Length: 122
Image (cartoon, rainbow, N blue to C red; front, side):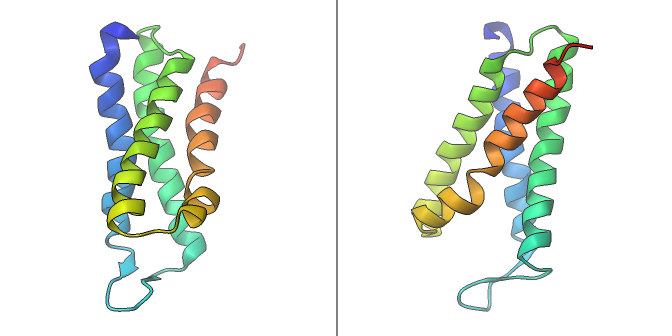
């Protein structure tokens, strides 16, 4: 993974950034607390699919290079947690309990789930 560290970090940041950027268009900022324009279930599904799709793209590229290992999932998870703490919890003041129950569980499912799915024996 060392030779692909820049690629893995880029993928991890994009797997966090793309859903975050899309989420700004799915929230009504004029309401307090902010309401989700479709609804919470569609919002969460779109965020999960965007993060998973981005991770899938980078995982497949690494798998083709025979460089996909569990550390890639660790990096994706760590980057997402750090960026969420910096933006969602610190700047947007999302309560930590809400983040732990609504946002965090999606990350291990997406990143480790994709890893194990791609590494399964064929």
